[in-house]
Image: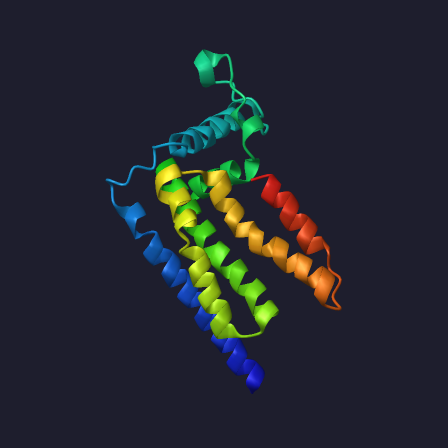
Length: 193
């Protein structure tokens, strides 16, 4: 009975995190929100160029051949591929790079809260504290500054994996579950964003 209550509580907490993420991303629905400032246009153009290179060459490119007057440009060498390919996958569904970008940052915000919830729930074993910590993590000013002002997508999605790194390190050092793979994979994904 207690396990069923805890399971239902976690589902409610996840729904709360999704609602908080959607509320925090409401300004993205406004057409006056400038996501082209700073790095925003680069990430959208990079996803567009990568998709067109995949269609032309049939492989995942490091150099986008159609950029720079068809001389090619190697944006994919400077940034990690996770953000680009995620935007491309979402674009296959909605066929609009701007909407794909906005959906991707919404998903990244929600997942950062979910991963922080999972880490804090295992660390403090208190669902109320874990929920509060994850909501605070989602609403940190620097987190939202990366979303709305800087459009630093690589840095923004790294916030999603930082709780997983700490969760893996916590499991490695303080629990009998010596699953160090979570820490290593999360760190590897974090440096490739």
